[in-house]
Length: 479
Image 1 (cartoon, rainbow, N blue to C red):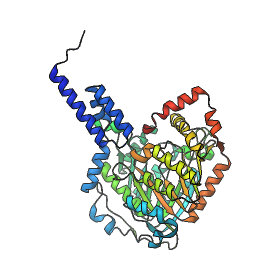
Image 2 (image 1 turned 30 degrees about the horizontal axis):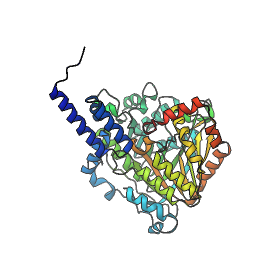
Image 3 (image 1 turned 135 degrees about the horizontal axis):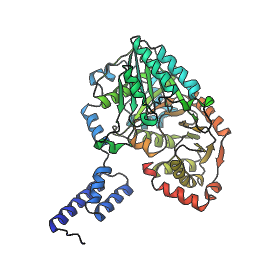
Image 4 (image 1 turned 180 degrees about the vertical axis):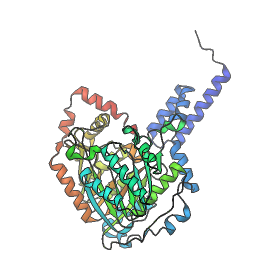
C-alpha cells in the first residue's frame, strides 16, 4: 500500500515546515536546540512542526512575561513596593570597594533593591529548621504566607498542618501554596487536609489533562515562610519527614540547610509570595505589614526571584558575574550539578585565573540519571584545576555558593537547567563576610568528610559506565 500525497497537501506541509523552521531560527537562543528543531521540521514534514509547536515553545514564559509587562502578575501595583514600607536600600558605599563588580551585575538584572539591616540565622536539617518554623507559626499574630515545593502528609507535614490550622482558629490569616507536582510526593495530598481545615490553599500549575500539563517541567521550587512580615524562612528545605536526619534511616535521610531571616528583606519574600499567589489564583491578597525595626550594621541582602516570568535569567547572570568577580576562592555545594557550556567555560576560566574552586556533590544521588550526566561533565573542569568532592550519605540537598568568604547566594536554586531557566526559584544574595564565613565553616565540615574526585577516577570508569554517563549527558539541557 502506498500513500497518495496530493500536491496541495505537500505544498502546505512544506510551507508550514519552512515557517516553523524560521520561527525556531529566530527564537531559539541555543544554536544547537535551534538546529535540532530546524532539522526535525524539514525532515519530518508535518510531524516535526507539530512537535515543535507542542513541545518547543515555552508558553508559560511567553504568557507570564506578557502578564508581567501588562501588570497582571503583581498582586496590586498600588500596594506594591511604593507603599509597602520595604525600608531603605543598602548604603550606596556598597557600590565601591569589595562588592563593586557583583553589585553592578546584580542591580542590572534584579527588580528588588538591596536591603540593609537584616539578620540571617543558619538552620541545619529538620532538627534545627522545623522547630524554629513551627515556633514562628505558633507565635504569629496577624498573617502567615507559606510556599513550598514538597509538603508531605507524613508526621512532619501533619505537624505543620495542625500548627497552621490552630493559627487560623485564633484569628491569624493563613495562605498556603504548594506546587502542583510537588504535592504528589505523598498520599493523601496535604492540600486536602488544609482545605478541610478551611485554610486557603493554592496549587501552582496543577497537573491536569489540559494543554497546560505539557509544561509539567515548569515548577515552583521556591520555599518561603513569612510570618507577620517580620520573620521569614527560605532555603532548600521542603516539608517532609526525611529532613529529620537523626531519626531517619541513613539511606532515606535528606540533609539540608535552611535560613531564618529577620529585617526588611522579609518583605521582599512576601512580595514574591503575593505575586505567585496572584498568578496561581488571580486573587489579590492584601499587603499586610507590621512596623518593621531595622537591625543597623548587620547583613545587607536582596531577594532574587528567578523564573520564566522574568525578562532575565537572573540566577544565571548573577552566578556568571560572581565567577568573574571572584579574586581568591569559590565554594559550591549543590545536589544537582549539570551546568551548561557557558557556565563550564566560566568555571574553567576562573580556575585558570588562579581562583581556588571547590565543588561538593552527593556521593549517592536521589536522581541517578542526573548524577550520571554530571559525572560525564567533570573531566573538562578537573583538568583545568576545579576541585570536586563526593559527600557520603545522607543525601545532601544543600545549596551554597560562597565567594571570597564575603558574598553568598543561598536559596532553592540548583546548578542545572531547571533552576537556571525553567523553575520558579527564590534565592537571597548575602553581602556579609560574617555570614559568608559561617557558611564556609559548614562547607569545610562537609569537605572534611568527603572524598576527592580526581581526573584519573573519572577517566578510569569502565567503558560501559562512561558510555552510560555520556548518553545521559546528551539530555543535560532537559534534566
